[in-house]
Length: 266
Image (cartoon, rainbow, N blue to C red; front, side):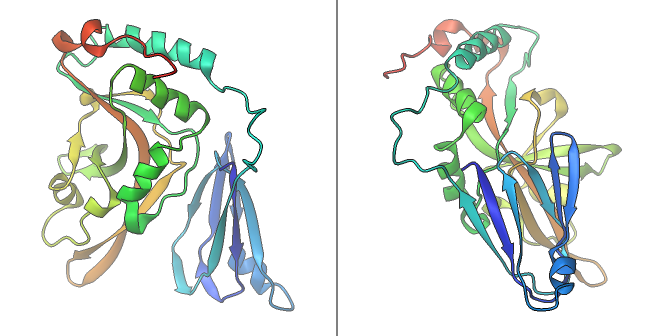
């Protein structure tokens, strides 16, 4: 998938503004205002590259009806497709091997995190299955990273990272790692979001994870949950998909344990 096309139907609504960020630039696209300004019913549409970050604001009233098309290159003739990332993979393999040999890196064990560089279609009503599909169809540099991690026997997995406020620290948010969006708690009673998430996922402290490539929001999941105070309230939390590998304590990170580079034919 190299991009997506989103078509907005001329239904009356407020909100649903699309904010786009790409290579340090930002744009806003308001389909409600565009369709309302037309003399006759008209659609609005926007096309985005797969590495463009997008965020859609909440629809405050009415209904926002859309169709999203995932855009792919024609794969009927793959004979001229180049082998992508061979040199990059060799360099990354060497770099990660050196990194894992560093006894000062996560001496008590922890996680290596890799933010995704491309956007992938995520089906939130069946995220576990969708994540399984995505990890087997990564693109470009994301695919190179996974291939190298497999060669190092590091068992990469796709995880969802949510950032939540720390009840004990007003400044630093906590990162909570879930296996799937289905694990996200749908409602809270007297617990904070941090407490609710900790029952379903893993709270990661900053000293327990090393981000080799920064966490991105290109493939973001919006999760809904209900809080109860004086009255029920619908809230939203945002989780970002990333590649994660768990690494053991320093003493167990031996080259013989990790194995050498696997052949491309294996």
